[in-house]
Amino acid sequence: MVSSHPFGIDFGGSGIKGAPVDIKAGDFAGDRHRIETPQPSTPQAVAEVFAELLSRFPDSTGAVGVTVPGVVRRGVVESAANIDKSWIGTDADELFTKATGRDVHVVNDADAAGLAEVTYGAAKGHQGVVIVTTLGTGIGSAIVYRGVLVPNSELGHLEVDGHDAESRAANSAREREELSWKQWAKRLTAYYRTVEKLFSPDLFVVGGGVSKHSAEFLPLLDINTPIIPAVLRNRAGIVGAALYAHTGGA
Image (cartoon, helix red, strand yellow):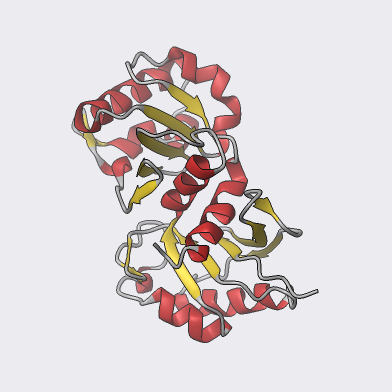
């Protein structure tokens, strides 16, 4: 049976994962498949993996959304902190549309997660300013107001206490420096207080793999804004990308 469900692809440093998504349910409409990220992960090499991944879903015909760990403006990738530098300046929408023969829309990975959490997850229906942060190798961020995304916020790169915030407050810093939950929470408090001063959000949502341990560190944060763990976790990128594609990249 041919499926018109949009398809979400989550492009990461080690793996490329994809699945069709039921937009009404906010969940996968089929099994998720994963392929190792090619090395080097140049745009052309990644495009070939996308084509291979989509070939595993011959009945899928909907639009395709793709997350990219970088700034994306009108389909063009403008930064590449954790991917091959050849991505900078690449019109990824055009490249992937030609490579796959599908209507493809590219979105920043944290923005995709933010859209998913606001539409289906922890912040569903929230009418204020929601800032979704993903704590992983770096700190990703998404600002959403009444369901409308303000793209490419890149709040992980704010300067806090003289340092790039994610260099000290990302989960990778906690692991690298073997910080206790209490020690890490002190750094996170400094980070979230800085974001509070700049944006006065109504809610923080914390995603990333470490969010499954949220009970260990969220209660230790000393901030004024309510802060809660994400719900979709590792599904958020795929679901959010598919939602973004379904709305035509708007």
